Image 1: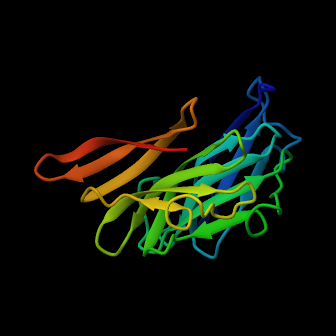
Image 2 (image 1 turned 180 degrees about the horizontal axis):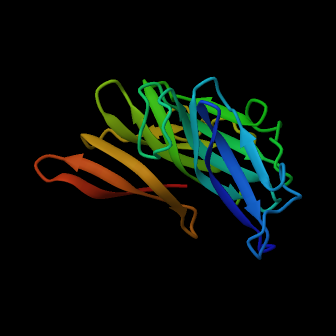
Image 3 (image 1 turned 90 degrees about the vertical axis):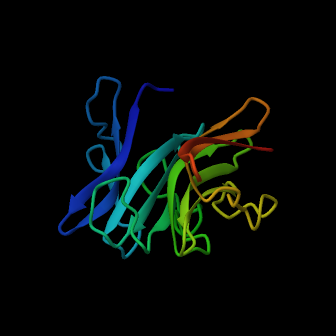
Length: 207
């Protein structure tokens, strides 16, 4: 709302990649009031590759970031390590981690699967948070959606323990989500169905 611009991704630090969040002012100049010279870098896990894939600005100025961590040292956003973990972090408006969210500002989870990655995040008007991505159950990849409470805990009134996993297709993924005016959630991605192969997939969930 103030015209400033947020960009999320990763940066190489020595022999590993850390999650990186950058803020620019309306003219494209780094915002010196954010992080260190406009940049904040977070080493969220002990794994060597951490990448931010989506960012969401809350009305109070706090910043939600979704991404993943893995043991394969690559910058490619489509490479998922066998031990990948989904990440959700929340920052204060100054770029510091919001320690009131999840565990010291960071939610790190495999969602009970072999691996998981988060690709998209949206905040509901009531403060709860939608996150979506891909998990691997040891055989195939499946789309997943999770609903978090405002404090970063799983909202157990949704799905199974706060998580919905697509089991209707052979393989699937969620890459983007949007919230309708009636609160219903739209999630877009892909689904693999024989014999047609990969198709565009659209999910809609009740609020």
